Amino acid sequence: MRGKTPRPLTVTPSDLQTLQTIARCRIEPFFRVQRARLIIGVATGQRIQDLAERLDCDVATVWRTCRRFEARGLSGVLARPRHRPGPATSLPTATPPGPAAVGELPPTSTEPEHRAVVVASGPVEVSITPVGLPFLGAE
Image (cartoon, rainbow, N blue to C red; front, side, top):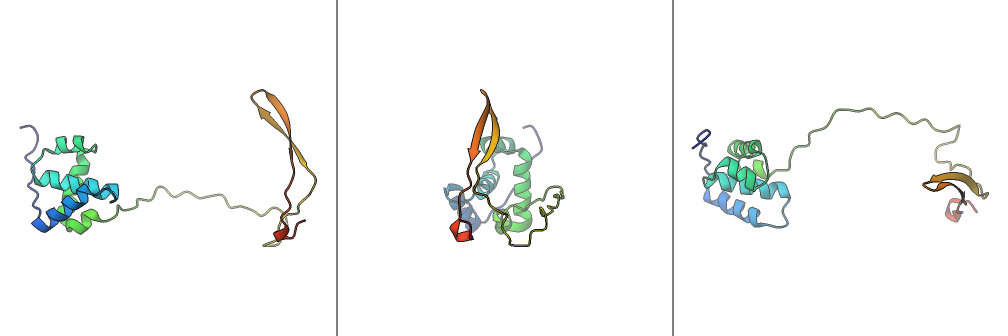
């Protein structure tokens, strides 16, 4: 047999019953179903590589799930995945356009606005007419 001898994973009968219920469930989140299937597979003696291939995950995921089960038990394995924030990015600050007061609407015009739009066949003249919003005071 190639590779390391796998560490045995001991699962209590009550945990095994819970895991089997979750592994067959169609409404549980995917991560819970996958983790339950991984633990059941390792506990029943399946090869790690075969199990990872059958469940379409990496071998490291199988090992990590088993170590999490050993360290934190069933509740630790079935807990939501931790959010790993990405690199911090700063967004540009928006400066208000002109001296408009807070809550003041921009002036509206009833005149159609003309814009040139370029499409695949060439430039086309488009007319945009503003729509009055009576509930905002514009008529």
